[in-house]
Image 1 (cartoon, one colour):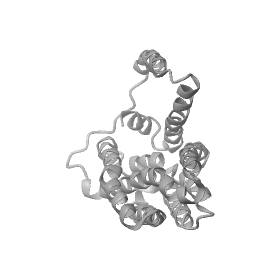
Image 2 (cartoon, helix red, strand yellow):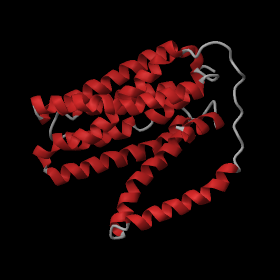
Image 3 (tube, helix red, strand yellow):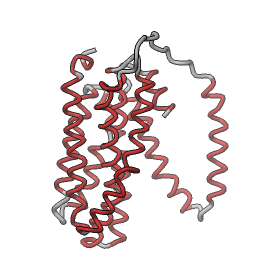
Length: 260
């Protein structure tokens, strides 16, 4: 949370490229670390030791950073009602992102086998990382709100395409590519809309994001148990489609802030 807020504040008002870069490297680490541990013969203790050494080296580098300028103090209450759209968007977004990574294997296994379905899930997470790298130059040229809404719509189309069994193995990685810029670019969008309250609101927004899959995974599981694996793409389409609708309404409601 602190790292995302630091990047958003340091590079405001055009923080989207930097945020996409930082979150892409989160994905790089998530993909590369398990592979490195596997290639080393499962040396988890050694791997954690390396992480500890790198973290120690980072401490003096972090202390040398300049504190980003803070906005002037603003009187009054935090505009939580106006920020509710961002909280809802992130709640839905992470529910959809984690939902695809969790349940696509259940949907694909009957068609392509369990091993291939598990591999496809890895491809999905890799596509999410690649998508954030691709979003760096795009987010430098496209307004954050426009990029988030467009990405949400493309992800919705990908989830809908996953209803076709022969297309589904390709549709899920496409969903990962489309979803990729939403999380980091949305923070840049929030910073533009609430420059004086961005740190407070962003903290709450990121909390809502982590609560998303916690609150919805049980419902996902219940639906799959009742209706079978064929319901997975339908549920994901509804969730991701809801995220698109929320982002579109939010864009229409924050047009004045997007021009700044």
